[in-house]
Amino acid sequence: MELPKRAGNASIPVALEEGKNYAWCTCGLATEQPLCDGKHKGTSMRSFVFKAEKTETRNLCSCKLTKNPPFCDGSHK
Image (cartoon, rainbow, N blue to C red; front, side):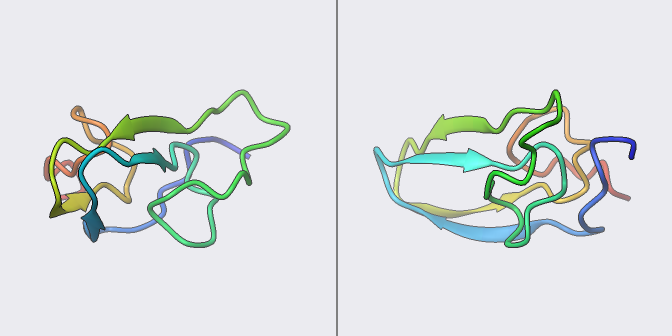
């Protein structure tokens, strides 16, 4: 199977909490996109861990093509 797998064709809004760490799925295999659930185990893929800078809702990438991970930049279009 070729990774990353495209997990969707639109961004996914996620409520982020300031100071909290999040693990964004980079492989596209996670059941609850766009966050990692460890389904990449056994592959060369790793989650992308980031800390929310402020409490807000942000659109996270589901197509895995973004140039600004983990945030959607419209690359799915």
